[in-house]
Image (cartoon, rainbow, N blue to C red; front, side, top):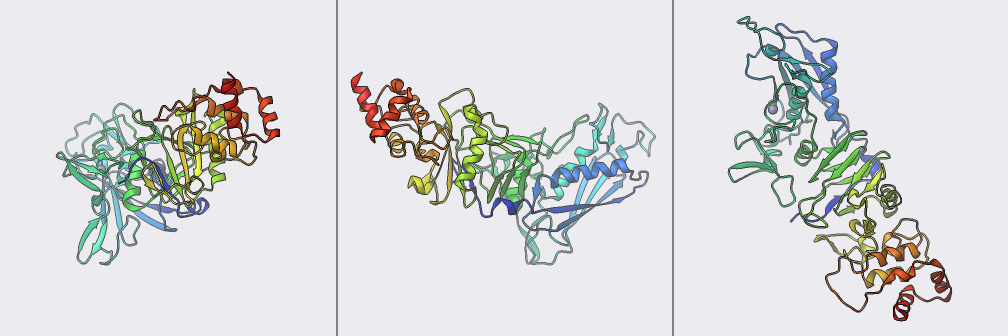
Length: 469
Ligand SMILES: [Zn+2]
């Protein structure tokens, strides 16, 4: 079962993942009445860049050649992708970038002139390949071509594992399933659960606002959605990049390798502290120097990748002194405007736990949890266990969340004790009266400094003060 946590399993160091790439090379062929001009060719290149900036594959130097044709195809469509695997040897596992796979994108020039060449009648709308957004009487050629490139890159039932003479085991179609008379992509617990156009058209999504919807209204320019990217990533293992300057949000995240150079938010859930509907399942994760990853109220497991100190620095940047308004790093906007919650982090080994949010974890996995400030052991509540951890590390330097440094200054001190005090027994299911101290009296630092000098644990001081009151 895939559940609760945002899981990112890192197989490779972050630095090696950014170099993976593929190229799409366009070939321009003139039509009956239409010849390519520089502006139109630049629009094609923009559509290509839109995809190659967000997707890359695990093999370097892969080149996909696509012929872009102007054709007069009557009124039936704006543009159309045709792919062929006829030259690919049997026994070859097919991917969109496999050698010998050939692609054609036809752009229907019927719609590009103002009059029907067969009847001379005028059209109400024209298809334009322009850098600027389409007017009220135009279909957007950039959107149409970006959509067709989506088919070429895998929104297709064509690419498949080749077994013998049949193309069976389709990588894209394998992830679709029928439910209640409707076809879905990745309909699993915690999956993307993308509703497709119909049971007979599974290469388009049902959401009419999505780039990969079956039709395009006039005066509409669409962008590649993060859902589109994740679907291709799940089916073909593309790495997924949020480009610098781009901003995406999604309520589910599932991809091969995630590189956050722009802004990416996992939409918060209201039902729970961490969601059963959200899962980041990757083989790698990195946040660029200008990247911002907003976990809202979710948890995350980072396996075999970012070190604890790297995670600590990213969270410190996102935390921005406690306001959680950092422009870069790992943040939780859910914690904005409250002093009670934030992102805790620890290795599973340091917590001596083998499961986290019902998922198995390795001792080296770095866990990040949206929780109460003071929840040192990431169990979701602030209680005597956390106070004991803080006491054991009192005034230590080089500290982490798991050793009692909740504000990220590296020192376990009165500020961290205050975090425990403020959230005492938050998240706790028990209402034990044994420890319900009023910590309001410990705010003054001097007594604690004196306490340290005497070697007494802060927990002891708290009890004394409680009794004294
Ligand atoms: Zn289509």
